[in-house]
Length: 87
Image (cartoon, rainbow, N blue to C red; front, side):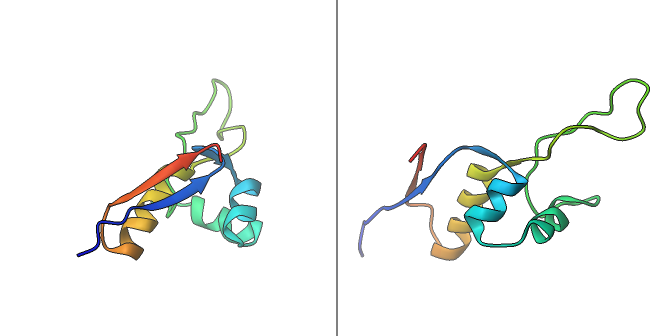
C-alpha cells in the first residue's frame, strides 16, 4: 500500500461567492443556488438578522477549507491529504 499524502492548495479558509465561483469553475448563479434554502450544499458562515430588519445583510461567506476537505475525502476515499492554506 502506498502511504503517499496528497497536497491540496487553497487561497483562504473562507471565501465569498464570487471567489468560490472562480475557484471551482461554476457560475455565480450556481454557487448562489448551492448556498440558499433550508439545507445549503455548501457550509456557510451563519448570517444574522439585525434589529429592525427582515432579512440578513452582508455577503455570503463560504467555509471553503471545510468544503474542499469534504470533497477530497469523498473523491480520494481516504483522509491522508494536507490542505495548504494561503498558497
